[in-house]
Length: 110
Image 1: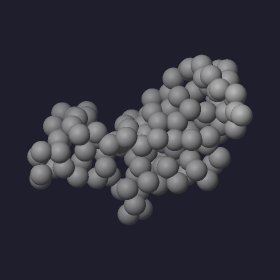
Image 2: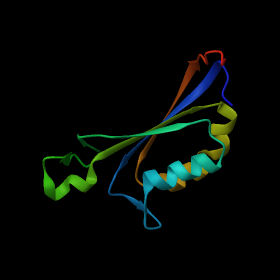
Image 3: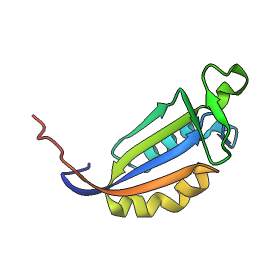
């Protein structure tokens, strides 16, 4: 369980059309994080964006709408992130991984 204090926020920038062993990358990564004991993760699907290849992807462009941007985020301790990062890099494929130092405040549970 994540507690208040220093932590690391990890953001993966992916494409919803990208696959890992036939499964959407974001699904494979989310499953990996769940089974690795990560406190929680969120996947957000964008409506438009472009990446390093400078190709525009948007929901209104039907022919490329399967390449919409996906952002997957989680916050965890530095130790847990360091332990899973090599496997996370393998599963992210051509996606970009951003790691930031942060501070979290976990409210008291009643």
